[in-house]
Length: 320
Image (tube, rainbow, N blue to C red):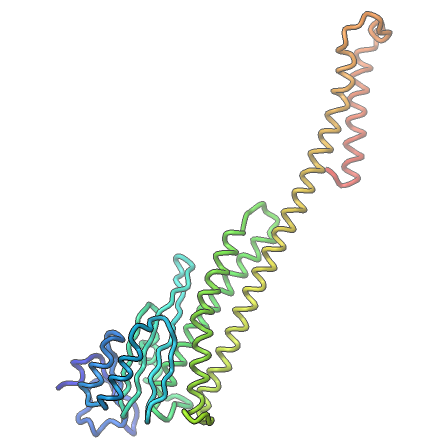
């Protein structure tokens, strides 16, 4: 059987990683095969001669667990499923997927669902020497988890830019309504955290062996720290959005108060000439002012003077 028939293949030897099928199975201390889907992992593992009982137990345990993170320590290996996150620029959405990894008997089987492209990043990382590869897979597992954290970090950076844009909109002084954008961003941050927080839990399980002792892999502890830092940043973005929503509502309340004062001031200015005109509109015969030669221009002057006076008073008080 040709190993490459099962999927894209890489193999590791003392001089590094190589793409394609190894000349002989013994020439590779670690063999990495990318499988099309998670459901095919148990079948491919059996075709590669891995222990049937272990493979079948993994297949049964993994059934029906889509979207749920899991780490299972095996004798000389590990089986994990981890969520992936990516950011779609066109719709400003956070997309989630899943990656599966089985490490057993010097063989690494991986499968990915979703648009994150973590396995492509793993292949790129293996093409260059890693500073601290994991001891179990000669770098595949550590590169995979580093790619997961890198994609999550990229999502956090894009969300940070979106939060900054919303902040500028809120305090731009324009009469816009950013409430929908704020709630949309909070939803995307929650989606990113749903993919990131379980990853932190999985990494913590990988740091310790089945007996609860420290496995001693510095790369895993560094990634745990990076995930915790990303989670704190996402939490800070979420809190900032909540503060921006409160600030927007406060600004709306202030603007409404200003509008009410402005309308009241103009209503008072208009009411004065209306009052004078309404008095002279009363058709009574005994009104001394009706016989004055200068009554009409005097009435107009009084109305204009009172309106100007009120306008100055309201402007000075800040109502206009």
